[in-house]
Length: 414
Ligand SMILES: Cc1ncc(COP(=O)(O)O)c(C=O)c1O
Image (tube, rainbow, N blue to C red; front, side, top):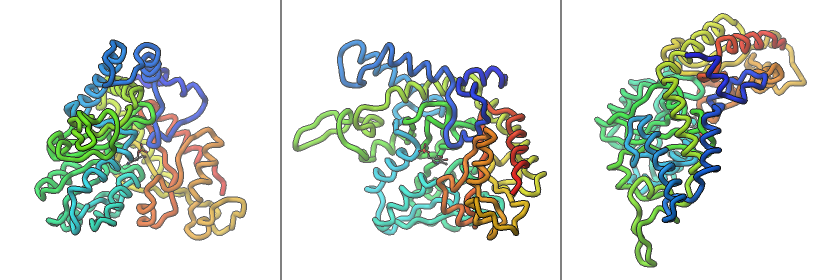
């Protein structure tokens, strides 16, 4: 993998900063930006509706983008529903599935879920559905024994993240998925942090999968819900309106077949086009190569974290079990002193510098990292910490950038 030539494809990297927040959103290569411009300059029209040639071309581009994205994950194109993002995909699923769940049914999640794979299911509690959680072991892996004991006959759905956006853990979805299938539970995967980073193909045990375009070099505002066709056929739509119907009378509505049934209103065509270009880019580099590169960066990050006594990091100790991020806190060098001009009340309580203060300091050094709860607040409460700093990298980051970021941490004199 030629990082220098990859970096040249990302115009924003000409600015002088170290971007370590790709888990929040990735940067975009020129190929994606150009595909979107080309769409608007040459093909823009509303899709699925009109007879004239320009509209047919726009529809053809939209549908071939769907096919390209389907191929990327080894699915069929009629199993790909375009949404705004992972959040909308999981909400769509929770609303559509609601009619299939009954009072007393259970949903099994894990302690490490992002709010997007938590709140849509917690919402079902007001309909009499019980939500349970798989516990974590001391390194931040899902506890397989706990999972087995909680996977009772009442569990109708298991929904877990493939990669934790806080701990970096790569979960063994094959194990959880196969067990869920044996139990006749639906199995849902939150792929927001895995599809951009790991080689992946849909398997029989995955019923639904959600991911976001903007985390995998695509534009914002486009995401995917994959669903097994036989299941999508049996689900009611979440939203109603234009595009998603075969026929409407005031007495009767006949819906389109999936996936169009789930795409009410004018879709995000530029988003689909941009995501398809992003997928082409990822395929050209190769997902195996991307994983290998990110693994090397992760190994170096872990070494640097291990060698700094002031760093407390979270998640597995083995780089092979981790994807492209590390969450940590920095201990104060002078923790017994009250620092009045910082938000860091935790300096006194937990001897940790508040993650926002660390991120602000890093930002001043042009190292851009996320801090806080990373939309997984219950996980932090469970870990007993008040947020973390997170470095997250992608195919365009270098070992030197990781080293510089850790070096900058050493300059914090609090
Ligand atoms: C694991 C995980 N799930 C879901 C999401 C939500 O993604 P989006 O904001 O694109 O809907 C994120 C975003 O950070 C995430 O990391």
